[in-house]
Image (cartoon, rainbow, N blue to C red; front, side):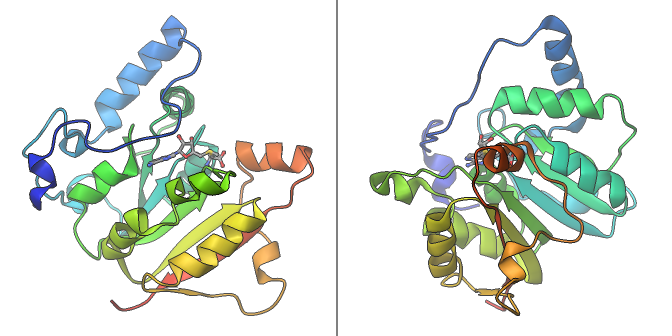
Length: 239
Ligand SMILES: C[S@@+](CC[C@H](N)C(=O)[O-])C[C@H]1O[C@@H](n2cnc3c(N)ncnc32)[C@H](O)[C@@H]1O
């Protein structure tokens, strides 16, 4: 492992929300039960400061590839994908605990064996993911940080993209949805600097949703408020 391990526990700034309203006791119980079954203890620096790289095939049975959803919100897209692709192992990351509780509620009614959860920052997961290990990534409506002085907090910056491209296999797809035109601009500029190519084939490509798409909560809100979604697909090039 690199020297990140020698840094103090709170070595990363996280600017988003970690919790909202208090959880009801049933929600809290479903959350605890699902996290006990599905979280990946090896990821948490606080629990395990001697973290080692994880072996993804140890986390799932009978899967042939691995997918990551970063910031799954309420988890509806993650569940949709996992139900339709039993041969793919899905890891969902989300630091907002009320969102994780929503996913836990959904999973408690299903028999899915191909979902694991990291209830925290994706950067903790990057620390323990082997190079070239992930086959597809969803980044759906990442926090927009609309003020110019906050643009450097966006996901599409080197702080995230260097590690993201490292853990993705060559040829793996990154699917990024956003309703913010300036986020499209920054994504096209920055993602392509980090060993990714934008796969758009014609002018309509990025305005039409993917064929296996389920609108997320955030997308539904954006549409209600009159904003237009954009769908960018990037392919990881050889590094
Ligand atoms: C605007 S919300 C979108 C949620 C969901 N993808 C949707 O479309 O409804 C962005 C989400 O990204 C999560 N997020 C922000 N920074 C993150 C990080 N470093 N690692 C993982 N998730 C993160 C936030 O907690 C938030 O839930």
